[in-house]
Image (cartoon, rainbow, N blue to C red; front, side, top):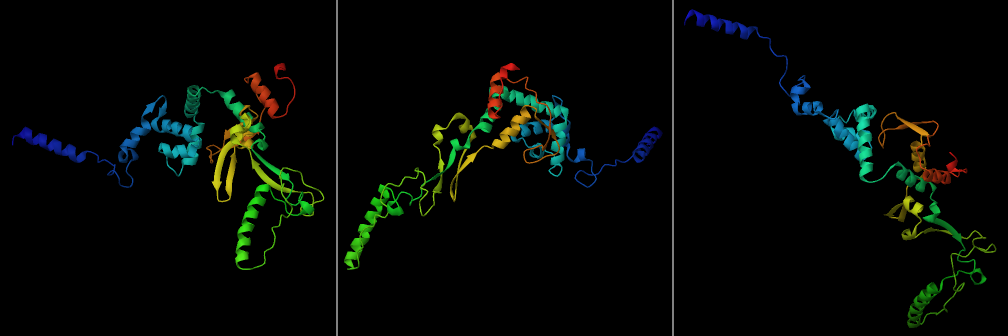
Length: 305
């Protein structure tokens, strides 16, 4: 080997042995840098579009769908252990909050609905009379109008009882058993809508109560907004209604009567901590102001400023 070749080989060997060793560990072992172990997730975190990372944009989309900050954070790829705090922090981030507001405005434009429309819906729910959907009525009992205050039935009930008596009477005749006559008791004519009789020896004028559900095909518009459907249970049908208390809270927040600041994360996302401030009514239409005054029983002329 020539002298120059030996010199080059020696120099290469010196450089190889003196080069600092990498302190990084094999991907997947404890202590490995996060970016080396999960290079794809590193790209997700650093890829930005419109000022937001992919994970933050995913959070915005999930929050618009669920309105729950912690669930949106988990769905966007953040750790479930810190989802509550992370969701709250993201809602406070100016860029994220602006993206949420922009997306909500775009969605409202697509569905052709504005703040006044939503407010009127809440007002309808808040001012609706639940008696227009479900009533608890008290009327006469079975003994109030019966002959000698005996048990009274309708004409149809008497007819069915008479048919059952005829069948039983025929059986008694075949057995040569005693055959008592049909007992009309208090006679026909029972009507639960009649008022109770104070002299009734059974109810003493209190009558009996019953629940009446109105025909949902013919509800008033505000009551129809209050109606949330029915659910069949083992005890019968359950009529569901929108929360009027929640509607009043939303109206107060919309008008600025209750300002909400984020203090954490709960079932519906952020937990509002409320404090009262002077409401700003300058941006509401006169029609909405009239509806609000009617809902809260306020007088005065809305056109008078």
